[in-house]
Length: 272
Image (cartoon, rainbow, N blue to C red; front, side):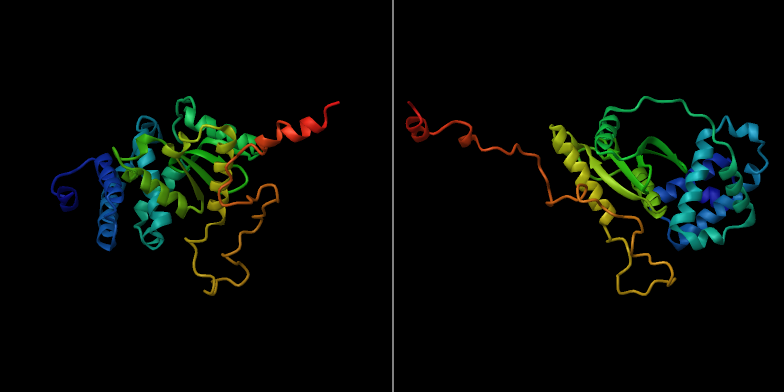
C-alpha cells in the first residue's frame, strides 16, 4: 500500500485495483481511505484507458473488480463518486458500458433449487443466478426489488455465524442499490424438514423483509420532495391469503385424535 501510494515502484493496474478492493473489504474507507482510493484509481486509470477492448476479454477478474469498485463508490459514497477525476469517471463509464465476458453456465446448487421450488409453489415470479451489476445473486424476484440470499456454510467464518467480509460488502452494496434482502441461513433451512414448514418460513421471511422500516428515516422527518414520499411503498399490497395470521405459522395437522374413535358410551347406546 505504501509503495503504491508513494509511486516510487510502479505497480500493475490489476494490483492497484485489488488493493482498492481490499480497502473496501477491510472497511478502511473513511475520509482518509477515500482519498487513498481516489489516488490509486487515478494512478491506474491512465494505463487502463489505453487497453483495447480485445484485451479485456482475457481479464474478466479485472473487469468485475472495476465494476465492484464503481458500485461501491456510487452507492456507498455518492459524494466521493461525483468528485472523482475525469479519467477515473471515464474509465468507470467505459467499463460499465462494455459487454461483459461470457460466463460458463454452472448448475444451480441444491439449496437455491429448493428455494426456487418453494417460491414457485407460492406463485412468486423470480429469477435464479441473476446478474445485477458486478454480483450474481442467488434469487431475485421479478416484480419487486427483493433478493433471497441462500447463505450456505461457505459464506461464514469457521465455527461461527459471522459472515465473511466479501459477503458483507456485497450485502451493503445491494441494500444501497434499493433491494430488500431476505436472509435464509443454512442452519435454519436444514432444520426444517417439512415442505409446508419451509413455505411458511419463506413466506414470513419475505413479509418481514418487505415491511421492515428500520433502515428508513424516522416517520416524523419531512421528506425532501413533497410529491415523493419515501416512507410509503407504492404497490406494496398483500392479499389476505398472502398476509400471515401469526408471527410464526408452523404447519400442524388440524384434527383431534380423541374424535377419531367413538367413545364407549356412544358405542354401547348405539348397539341394537
